[in-house]
Amino acid sequence: MNPYLARLCRLASQPSRRIIGLMSGTSLDGLDVALCRLEGHGPSTKLMLEHFATVPYDNDTRDRIRTVFAREQVSLEYLTLLNPWLGRLHAAAVLRCLHEWQVNPAEVDLVASHGQTVYHAPRHQHQRPDFPQNATLQLGDGDHVAVGTGIITLSDFRQKHVAAGGEGAPLAAYGDFLLLSSPDEERLLLNLGGIANFTYLPRAGGDASTAFSTDTGPGNTLLDAVVRTARPGQQFDEDGRLALAGQVHPALLAALLDHVFFAAPLPKTTGPELFGAAYLTAAHQISGTAALSLEDTLATLAEFSAVGVARAVQAAFTTRAAPAAVYLSGGGAHNPALRAALAHHLPGARFASTDELGVPGDAKEAILFAVLANEAVAGQPIAIGAGRQRVPAVGMGKISLPG
Ligand SMILES: Nc1ncnc2c1ncn2[C@@H]1O[C@H](COP(=O)(O)OP(=O)(O)OP(=O)(O)O)[C@@H](O)[C@H]1O
Ligand SMILES: CC(=O)N[C@H]1[C@@H]2OC[C@@H](O2)[C@@H](O)[C@@H]1O[C@H](C)C(=O)O
Picture (tube, rainbow, N blue to C red):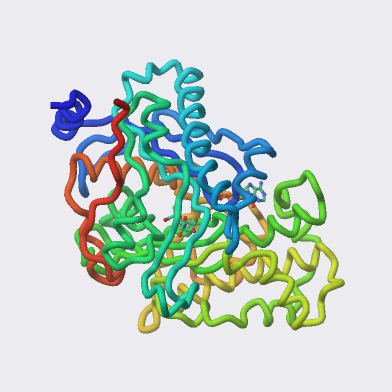
């Protein structure tokens, strides 16, 4: 037997596993690296986060990804070259983190690598009759991470979700359900990344089939794009200072909200393919606001993100009140302008951070992939999907052996 397969079998029956979760999201700020100790599997999973770091992307890396990111037309050669290049970059980042944390790679059981989403194409977005499927593409091939780190790697988690009928995202519900369900309260877990999404969790022990997650629209992606253009060298509106100095422009807001995505049934996903710079330019033109100040544009975009969240929450809870307990994660949770707009549009909510539940908000998505890998190796197909999520129980992740 291949010794790596034998190792994998041993890992599956161990009481706990040490797994590195990797996530690089739509904001392209860097690679999130979470070294997790995961004990057990399924609803009895216990997480100990041993270390977490975001390894920032330099300008060259960001530029390379942006050459293909969310673009309909790209050079096939460039895409092909970027795939192993990113895999090796992520492997090198893992080794650097382990060195800093004084952890021997041989003492890590698995890497769980999300890769870099370069194009997300749910059917409702691509609308091509010749391709009736949902589709999504992540680069940074798992074989390159496995060979580069010497650690067995699981990757490409989203394809199984698509194969089973889902849109390949959000996968957050699977990890949230296993780690953050509580017998004491039902919860909304609201992640404010480039794209915003939330997970609804019923009380632990309740009807698990009602758990689900959905994207709600942009989180930070348009805010970041505007700042990058207006203030070269700046990646985002630090502490929402510019947005807080502006006023919401009602006509621009109305133009931004005028898209079928916001009325589409839940769950649904989206990405910068739709909510990119061109979307904002069109809304500026329609509303006659092309000359609006940077501050007012950012204030309006923060409002837009918050209204998107509020509309999805309203759509999810038409016959009863939404859960009051809302736990925030993702970079947008650090943006006071976004938080103020959310507080206004979700008046019944009691906001806290997932940090208070033992899962640091900035690390939550990287941890998710470690949890998915743990289930793929030691658990069962995760059975929350069949209900509201409308995806049969699946395990996710492809296995790459280092040798
Ligand atoms: N102090 C801050 N003030 C304002 N915004 C902030 C702050 N810190 C982080 N952000 C925002 O958070 C973003 C990074 O968020 P995050 O890392 O959650 O995104 P991501 O994981 O790439 O996105 P996604 O979840 O869509 O894949 C930054 O680009 C910025 O917009
Ligand atoms: C296709 C894709 O990469 N989607 C990401 C993105 O970033 C946020 C939102 O859009 C979410 O749907 C998803 O990531 C998280 C980790 C998820 O699947 O839950």
